[in-house]
Length: 128
Image 1 (tube, one colour):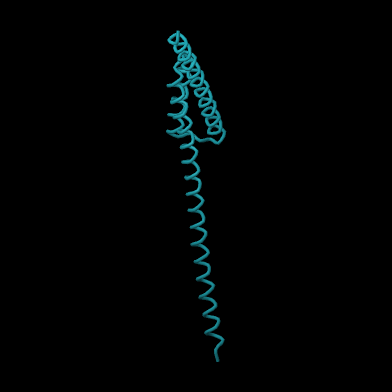
Image 2 (tube, one colour):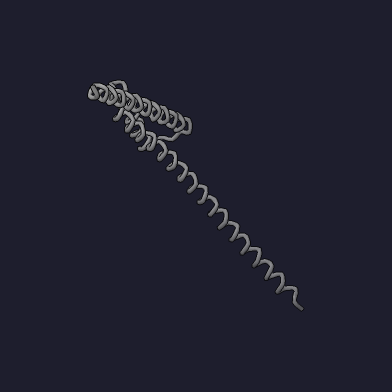
């Protein structure tokens, strides 16, 4: 009598795990799709986004085929790739800003040097 009850409990547990996996796969896919849209709006197009697009497409196919484990993993990978693409873009933008600031600093230092030279010359001509 205990074996049928145990069997039913195991079956119910497995069904619950399966539904959780499908939920996780859909959640990962939704997150990846949102990141994909953000990348598109931001104009981020690089090897990471290309790979993420392919991976997300594959995840959608696996989810439709009922392969929730594989779909969840691929969707998670796609989201990670989109985050990497966004981080790379942010790094590139920040490096460009730093280079512009360095150029401005060099120009300011040059201008300061010129002013100091003029001031020194003025002091030298004023001495009696």
